[in-house]
Amino acid sequence: MAKVKTVHRCGACGATSPQWAGRCQTCGEWNSLAEERVETSPRSIGGAGPPPAVALPITTVDGARAEPVATAIAELDRVLGGGLVPGSVTLLGGEPGAGKSTLLLSAAAASARQGRRALYVSAEEGEHQVRGRAQRLGALEPELWLLAETVLPNVVAALDTVRPDLVVIDSIQTVVDPELGSAPGSVVQVRDCAHRFVQEARRRQMAVLLVGHVTKDGTLAGPRVLEHVVDTVLSFEGDRHHALRLLRAVKHRFGPTHELGVFEMTGGGLVGVTDPSGMLLADRRCGVPGSVVVPAIEGQRPLLVEIQALVTSSPLGRRSAQGVDPGRLSMLLAVLSERAGIPFGTSDVYVSAVGGVRLDEPGTDLATCLALASAHTGMAVAPTLVACGEVGLGGELRQVGQTPRRLAEAARLGFTHAIVPASAPNGVTGIDVRRVGSLAEAIALAGLEPIDSRGQEVPP
Ligand code: TYD
Ligand code: MG
Image (cartoon, rainbow, N blue to C red; front, top):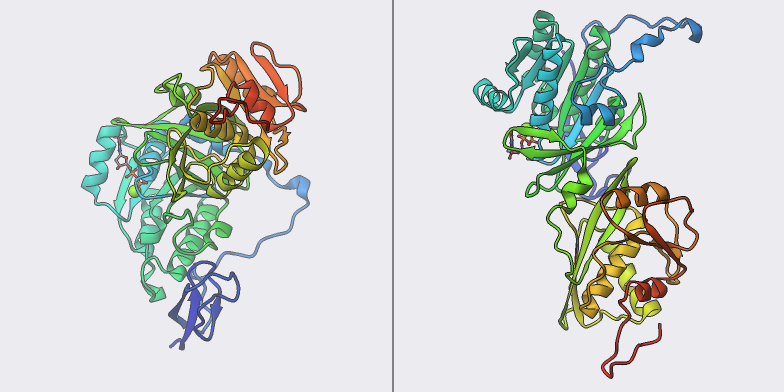
């Protein structure tokens, strides 16, 4: 019989230490160590273990194996660089309610529709629940098989009988291997079950999709080590109060990681959005102070996003940022105060990227500053104006990547004027491009120059 000993394992990185400590020595996470009983005799997860691999000259290796197979869900295929590679394992992470189950059930049905058998393993919901959802999604396909099961060996046994080309495990945190002895969702369970699915995917040349829950702060619940085990990590994000959902590849062994998939959550499931900018701007009210549109780039995709700011007089000086980095907002407020003469010390400041989009590229700096200046002065910018550029601590503007693509998208949606940094490249038609060197110049050009109480312009 195997010996059992007690170790303390970090819930964030999976590292173990013999003693408990307040902080993980490997990743530095606080309060992440939990006691765990492990068998000390070596144990192979896959029973007898895979046969030894054979070394080959690289030219004789079969290249066709890495060819992706389209899922027929266009936005998913775009992010995957064509589709799912047989024998690969993809992890889809997202907060509860993001739509992970909906997306992968649709992907499984699309595979089945094309004659590639799919097995959807529901380890969270019963068959009836999944069937009900499939019916609403129009996903009742004879080649889509369903298994409501949480026990790993039973799932593997079903692979033998069903012989699917594609398997969805929903979710990896709720599958358990009883042999491991630790609780469902624990680091050991999640990691070892994922390892087993990787082995099965390779051996059977089937594509495996794992659903992984992430916590509110955006980290994958359970071990980060899971990200190293799989071939591809996708993240599905979006505010549950908004319909927009963004799909990105965080890690991808078979292709680029810069593509962005855009979906809308509707009553009939997830629908791919071909014109996300148009959708994001649909409800915009023009002529309101504090609103400026930025042509942002998400992945390779230009995305026009309205940035809104609201400034109210208050001694508390509260700051609230939605979809914009709070640290970046503090920096921009300091630059506006010191380099453009617009102080916010006695105001509450609210900034929001509309539509539940999270913007984390510096190209949004200028539009954020103009929205803040507009809210501060109570004057609206021209409704047909866009602005993009990074703002430096000296109040200077710096160019950001792909300016022509950003401006072409703005022109497509009917914007006629753009404010960009002086160094931004030429070669954009259909939009009047104004180049400026500093934030103060941009504010003046947008018609937002601060006026002091005597009605005189404050020099920047
Ligand atoms: P779900 O796929 O269950 O999310 P996850 O698996 O990531 O937790 O669905 C998320 C939400 O989407 C759920 O609250 C209900 C909503 N929804 C729709 O609006 N339309 C639909 O057709 C479906 C299936 C779900
Ligand atoms: Mg789900």
